[in-house]
Length: 340
Image (cartoon, rainbow, N blue to C red; front, top):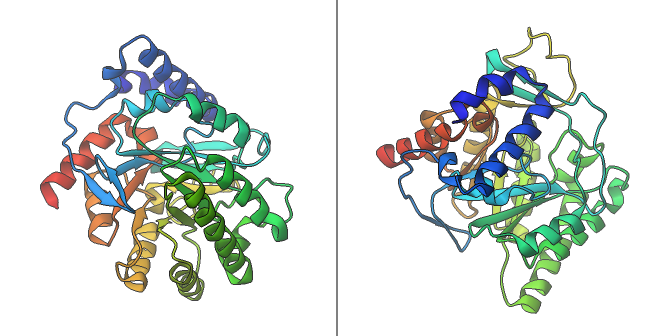
């Protein structure tokens, strides 16, 4: 069905297309036709990572369902896990439109959404009543107007509120679209943030009698020195996983495109090699001591195999799903079954 709908979606404004596609999936699911959203051949491939059992290693990255409004419909597609968010303590509209741009000839997307979301309380209300039964990640961030030196307070508030409903929580310190956010990836700010989050998580684990892993999502634009420091802090604080990578500020591969001058993070095929290199570096530095989630430019089964061979324990897709729909999941899972 997605192949029939795709030409219409690609003619629409990118953000309106995004909203329309999710609403359409929701209507299909509520009409009792959710099976039509699933790929034809999705082999089982369970993985045990971070103490969680994933029915398959391919998840949906944060950003598609920011407010956990479409979990049931997205769950029909067959993902091994779904990550919602990024969510912030207070609602915020995000950056002015237009803020989402497709570059179809490059199979790429540029976005500067700016953590537009309805706030953590609205998300929690939905998570309390969702019928989705799969592995759920919640991606948390800070409000745009929260000073960087007080950012940890925002992350702590989100963690406390989503903890009872999340299977794992991802700490987003790498979006390029919130001023000052990437400063949290290094130095004393990172050290303080991770220390406070781990302390609160341990308190909540005792309170709820369940352990929720913490994952940190990083940018592909860090240099080797920054990644070395980051890895030291991940190990020192006992972080449960690293997601690599977020979108890039680089315009390598799309520099001649008319939209290349638009500000925001670039995702999709042009990000593939950069994200692959970062994952390989993290794998070498962490030496299997911390699970890795490979994200960025996974557009087909071969890309997925490369990422797993580089050390990924799990994968997430976003732009590839926008361009190929559920067929991408079918291709990736078939390639992993036959090649690993």
